[in-house]
Length: 271
Image (cartoon, rainbow, N blue to C red):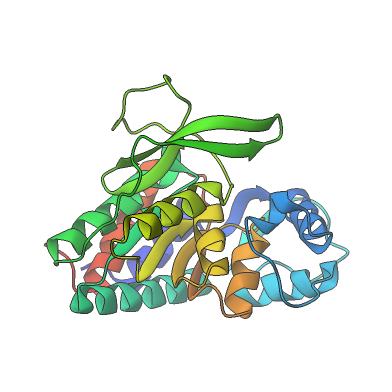
């Protein structure tokens, strides 16, 4: 089993935590957009509380480890590795409960290039434990809002993980999908499940719009989030996201492999 100390060292060496590639400028810009209720930063969440920029900075300092100094406006942002480890432990506990209950689970990512393998490992382990890993509306067209306007994508699943891809860009089932923060894919997937009368997920696992969009609809959610993703941490503070793990979400895909092993071991789901 990967020890906590070894994983902490990996988090820092891979820049998943500690000083990360996400800049302070990007983080502060996201906090400004969220405070202004810009949909690009809300990720499908409709906050109940009034969140100003200062409130968000204090929240992110507490939950993520960024500097609480509003005068710090440049340079790399920082994630406290202890908060990452605590988040991964909580993540594992909830997956263990889902496995014990053989609960239906929905996985989805807006970062397939980076995070697909991480979620895929968890989905495969839960499936082996008897959980139904849901893949609703595979191949269906989904309209997604982008900075260029609304564009048509296709909903697909790879290793049990939902993603969207541009139609015709790759064959169904390939590991490359589009980067998106939109909540529309998960809303579409959940709507398809409801219309089909099949089981709804007891748990939604992923990032960005997949987590916030599902959490806003009342589903229990677990997610990964970077320093420029305040929506997931707000969702956790307001009770609509169960667990948010702070980490850099855009490093090399293989750097997340030790995290998947750690979570699976802690959840007693390793082969």
